[in-house]
Image 1 (cartoon, rainbow, N blue to C red):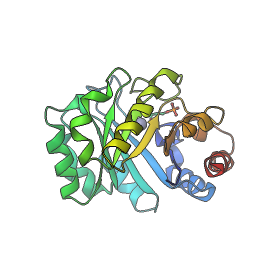
Image 2: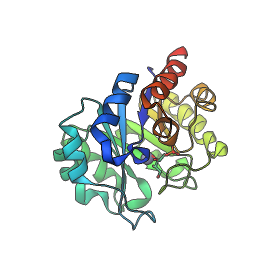
Image 3: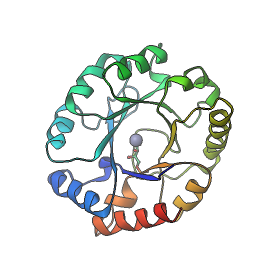
Image 4: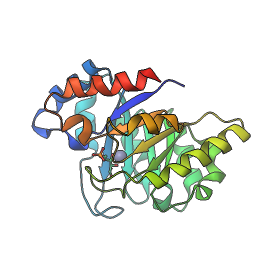
Length: 220
Ligand code: DX5
Ligand code: ZN
């Protein structure tokens, strides 16, 4: 599986979004991770549909949308129209994860299911046949710049086992606290899509920091 970098826009300079997107694209990033927060599912509010719609016009990156909103089923169509390519939602945020996955797929999007640090893999096992991606949180969702929870990587091992047993092929994505220092270890454990916010956009030279990440990702 090819390793992918998905820089999180949450840590970008919002006064120059177009420029920042260009920098990560030049640095070799394949995805852009878009964190949508509603102030209910998580104690923070970020950006939403109009921002995604507008940056869609100036970027060819794969839009990896991470919905941190209650009842994500209400907004699948809106995010499809705004330009999402992958739609990740939290299993804890809906009563009907299977229906949400089916709805996402009905629009031709890739469907991802996400688990918070304290949610066990068993909660998503019934849906794994339907998913293109599993997003494992290694921080409590809501804020960038938090410390990586290494013990949550056990879930990656568990997911890899199930994926093999059931002969499935979903991607495994990690989100929260990823740095150039810990990313190699993360990849070694089986993750193939890596989100990094502050470690990419917090750098003086965003293009350079993206390229440095990519070099590590491609060594693997
Ligand atoms: C947190 C978000 C993350 C966040 C990651 O709720 O889902 O995507 O932006 O930021 P860093 O990489 O700084 O931990
Ligand atoms: Zn995220």
